Image: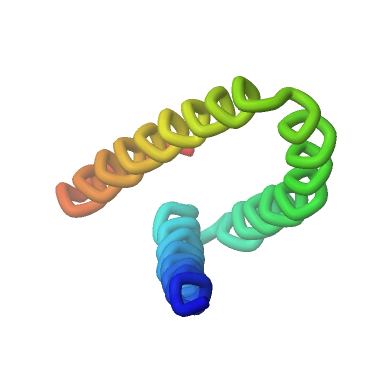
Length: 102
């Protein structure tokens, strides 16, 4: 049972760190004059994830067996790597004073 408590704490900490980083990044990359619009779209995407996530897991993954989980894991790894590269590139451009295109 200790492993379950450790997993819950680890997941909770990772989620807090990831959420704060994502919100900080979305605010930093939005042009100041259009920040409200950008953050509205960002928040809409978060809400979409909360709606579509459970549907995808129950509808697609549970019915597709192990192959579905492997494909989902691969998609998440690729998406995570792409997000990291985009964030790093945007950060470097911001530090260099180059405007970040939307």
